Length: 259
View: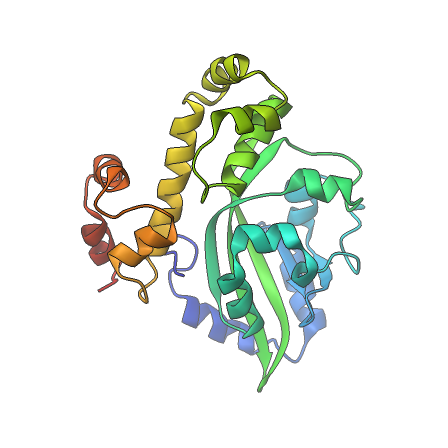
């Protein structure tokens, strides 16, 4: 995976952090004052640090109970959203970016990591940066960029979260309405009023985000990128992609340096 907005020069960024590998105390002091929300995970996936911006922005709780309790490698919700490929790359110590991550805030609240819900839903871009000491991974630093945060109706936020977690499935209006605890008719009307787009339109837009993500994987052809998202590269989503991006998928790859 690659994402130019997240990491314009990932290799250079990684090299700059290598000098800090032997001094975790300095790393933590430095990252605590970053304006960007940050978590640090030990090699086994346990959260060992969250900075001030993370406490204020992501969990809205200065006393959040993540450190020493939450384990990234044992979180089935994150595994489902990110996919095994991302987990494998992170475990190997690769720098990885992941755009459009729907924050599982309800799950975080239910598990007692935070005392109250700071927002109804949020979408973030993630950047995993490994910190190496010679041939050993000291930790993985996760940087967050919040791209969308929703504080409005809880039912619509639940519907949006459901769509993002089931983007590989065919869109099911009845099931999505059920996730929001609304009738199908209520759901269709209220969703459009709140989100400014129909539920199916929201689903299609999110599917296009995932297609763009796969297109930036140089190991996949255009056809394979579409197939990985459960759609045909010659079908409706090709037309939608071209219409919304004003370029073909092949042109999008070329623009981003993917041959």
